[in-house]
Length: 602
Image 1 (tube, rainbow, N blue to C red):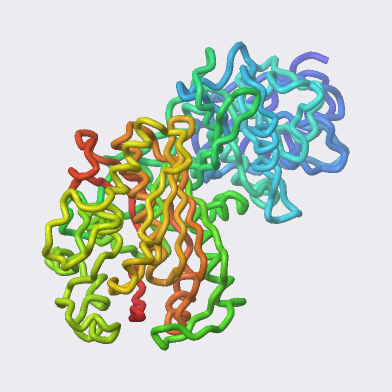
Image 2: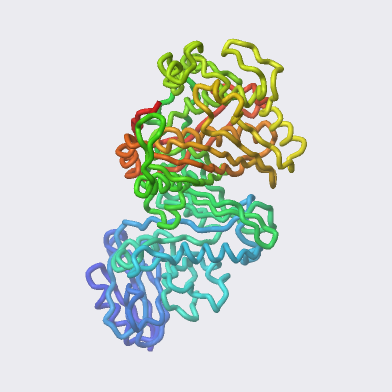
């Protein structure tokens, strides 16, 4: 039978397409009156076998072939499929589905060579399958959106990707599919995202993942509908001839980064970046003025809730280690008395591990006093034991342990108010020296542990004795408060510096958020002066406790969802551990929940 023109308007697409049922090959004139002037018809050739019907629903039980044909205008599209059901066509709205990108790329952003992956990483393939297949609702599935070349690069035996709706983008009228269960073809990304936003896909598809190739990634990363980028970051330069643009660091922020893995001699890690603002902008920073510790409106993320992430990725945010530990202590901790008389819930022997390679672990479920973290650490490094130095900068975190009342209460009646004795900084810089008071000059006295740590890292990085200890039993009776975070060991591998700190006593509500940030910062500083990059910070805790009067505010904090950690930059001109000032540390992208007050137990 010869070609016959059929007019399809917005009012009669179903009737017209049913006529196609009787034809072997025809031409279809498509009119969408809302976008094309009346009588300005566009001619589209449709080639199909007998008994094909129109259906937008890939879940039709008898479906064995599905084809989506796009008009010249990106959003004008129809689905042609075979089956025994009566077909129907839903007109598509301008609403589009949001999506997330999944990709593996080298440090040069290479993603392929000659249509294939130039590496073999089974764990990466497993991760890809897990993230694109797994749904929270067992009655739904995810969609994977790809270009024609990416589709053709998938081995025949794995195509289409099982358990997912495969959406293939192509403008080729001759493009064909040998087996098309769970496959839809679209002429553009916008038409595909409009289709997926309409019924029945809006009800049956949970998440949409864009999986390639290079041109598709370029379009996807520049569009506001991209919620997140899940990238396998291959830490080497492997020869590629297909590339993608880098992730825009002013728009996307690290959410989670795995610890590095090595497979087939290739080192790589999984990192998820989330969109925090709608468009590129100059990234705001906090603490450019070290006397200020407020978050202005200009630095707040436009996006506040990141639960659009797959659940398994969302819960990998490292702040959940802290939150789960607090929750566990509150729910299962042992009730104990303590020296302050407040009472605690306690657990013994806990560990948290933070990745310092992409972000900085300053907790976000409540506001942490960043300026206080910086100034206290610099005070430690200086070797000072005078709480009045911090008081002069508006840092009053040591006031309770430096007061006249407190010093008298612990038997240090002759000690001047503000004199804490041979605490952290003194032990770091003058271990073994005889302590007199906070005014004495101890230059050249005792053993400088911090300088020893730096020298060993620079000249003997494989040394297993790179230790910093604040625990000096001979001096404990002279201290206003014996050290809680008492011992740190440093480790160098693959050009990275890691630190493991042991804390004998940990106040989970007030102290631990500070301690995490402080030792992460110390690790970053030492790495910086030793020309290394930060690796891991491992926090080991003996007695991890929640004070009874902190339970209620901590429960408030547990109701807050984490936000992306900030990033830290250190003044590149500073290479001496004793030369730093607060303005040398630039914290970017810290947008926490509000401050939560908790009373210090003294």
